Length: 440
Ligand code: URA
Image (cartoon, rainbow, N blue to C red; front, side, top):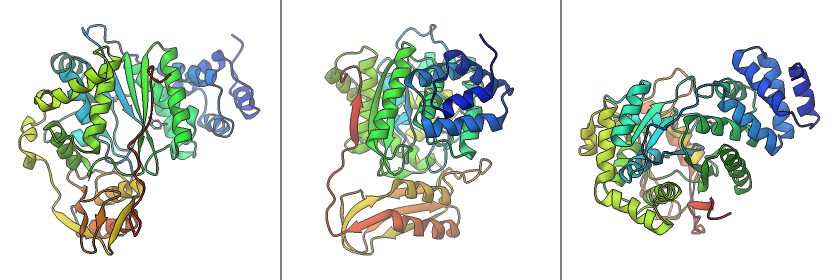
């Protein structure tokens, strides 16, 4: 291979000339080992934001980032291994529901998850609101738990796709997060390094998501599926609505409470139905039967109590108190609460999920800076949904926080986030599109 020059890579991407696979591999090695300085990496990232990458470059970037650290293998598990990834949203607690359902149906789901980012929540923060529970599992403890219960959720280790860690930190401070090839490589390098054979991607679309419209979300889904295919994995991408929060609870312990509700059988709602759909697709990809059979299996796992039992076993295996699945009062709750009421008669025409997520952060459910501690009991419980009719004085939502001042700050944001109009809004489907081997 000829000598590597980062300036040459920047020039080529700036002039829309494709990089060779060797150049991309060397660039990723240089970013990971620190021989490429941050200012050159940042310049290249900005060139990618303006000019994009070809599909081949995106696939190569993904693979090189995957190989920058540990790549996990699950040959020791005697069954299908699946993973699910959400591109990030508000009120998204699907992993807490999906993993135990899949495990109850004979699928292994060793999940690596992250903390909340900006206005979006993270599965690790949600799980850690369960008294005693830890997500810092040693590799052998993680494996033993997955073998025993079928599912476990651990904090992503620093050695999984370390190139992404460096690139993401730079993207975050150079306004270069919002590039579809870069988002694809960031997400898929970590997913592929996690080693599952069947990958379900929940691509969020709307005001609360990275992808604001269906066209961009479909392009991201296409690129991510191509990367999975190039690595010999099966992958379905489902575009789901994030113009409204998912479910009725936003905030860590509040979301665990809602997830337990679904696992106890409360599935006749948007969150419950989405989780059944996602679980059924994981089962179908894993060879458990046709779409209808798999949906029935997922429903049965909930109605029989098997999924709830798996969740309790997983909590216990992660040193948490499994009694929370029977007694919700064991979950933390913030000391102050306030109800926000409708100021006029009408219909709820918008529930801006990004603003609701930001209000959740103000209440203490998320972080404003990396080192902030979160309040596990803080958050918002919605009393109504988009499309519902309300009368002046009706409760729209309840806020929970530790201090009255946090309620004051969040209240104004929430007033702007929930829009009441005279006209009933047109219904908006929760699932916008499914891209799978069935739809190709
Ligand atoms: N999530 C990631 O892991 N990476 C991105 O670039 C965006 C969302």
